[in-house]
Length: 148
Image 1 (cartoon, one colour):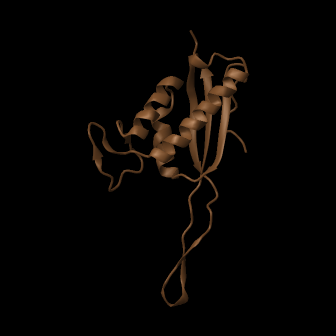
Image 2 (tube, one colour):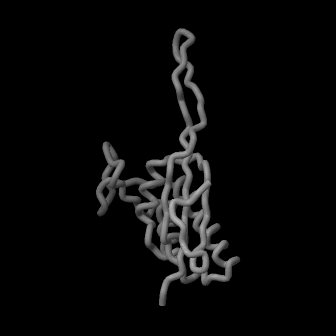
Image 3 (cartoon, helix red, strand yellow):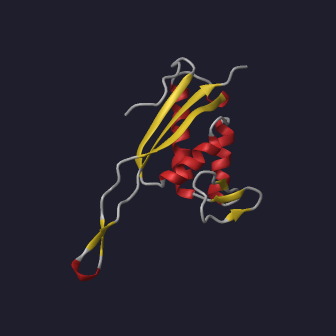
């Protein structure tokens, strides 16, 4: 397990979620939407997506995706938002345990990567089978204290 950047440990807190059974494509889109935002604002956005009040704009993986009001291609990835929300709260708790002000934190780095899949198979006709793998995702987050 390694982080893609090495921040100053005096002003930052980190968390890493490995091998979540969520879609890597949807995770990338949610991470792009939240990167650079305040922690409390990001949690509110995720709560709105989970409740179905706000859609996540899909910018990279948007072929054959329905348009949502005001944003274009988008969707409501509830499972992804729940996992990312729990990881943000975990990182916020890490910041509190380090003595940082958890209310004055912003998301410095948030990214999602493909993890190793769970291999499976789908039974087919005539005794054959096709691969049916379950996707998994690694997510890393770094929170930083805002400069006043």
